[in-house]
Length: 182
Image 1 (cartoon, helix red, strand yellow):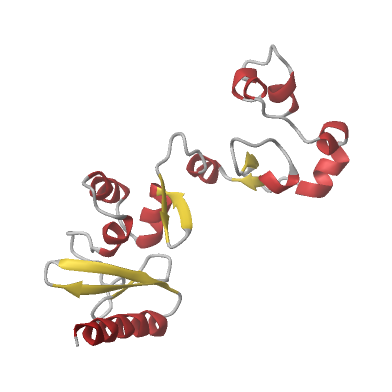
Image 2: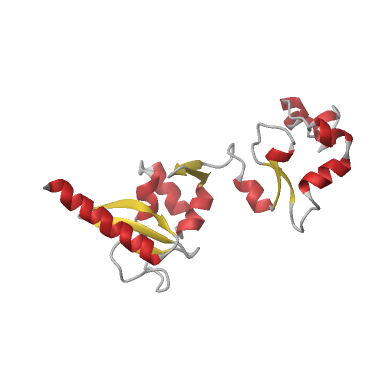
């Protein structure tokens, strides 16, 4: 960390120090302070800056796996936001149980993220991922996605922790639509 930020002859200096990335003063002068702030390094992790444009400081650093770090590189990842939550395309695909390439193709075709995540893939659904409730599907991560299914159109309603929450969201959405037509 220190060498990349401050040694001009370090092979990767241009990517850190050359871009103005610095280490906070407390960490520059005291490894004990760094250790106090970050704790010991957990196995299979390295130090990661949450915001790659900011320097090394307690509020911007974490211990992360190689996979987490790879997903935290906006320059190389497509970052997408839904309901105020931003993460890379791969993380969205994993969370909703959709193939990453399928999701990317849908976004490239102009689909909104809500629709791209709500429409079930054309492949046969896994028996453990589909519920018998219209508009609710359980994801690989155990959460439930709620959507309104109409003629040729699906509307993403939200993602919920419990089946009951998702079912209620579908009912409320349907009732609100019916009330809006009268």
